[in-house]
Length: 72
Image 1 (spheres, one colour):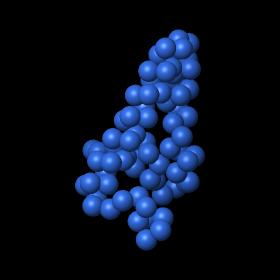
Image 2 (image 1 turned 135 degrees about the horizontal axis):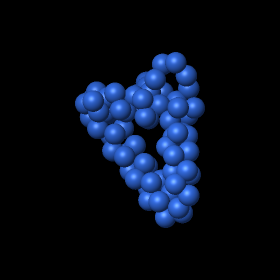
Image 3 (image 1 turned 90 degrees about the vertical axis):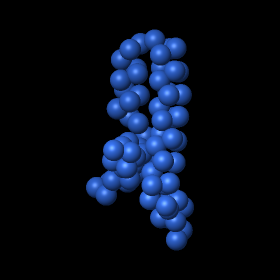
């Protein structure tokens, strides 16, 4: 489940460039619809924290850093 979430939410999908999907456009669109600045700030911080944790967990599971993918 962690690998799937990291793949889908953090941009490691083969059908397009990572930044297009990893930018969190859907997440930020949902936060914008709430219309509350504090919810937007808390949601942004939570989303960033979750993405960092997911990518780190995926690297540990795969025993490979993302830098290997780009420079290795």
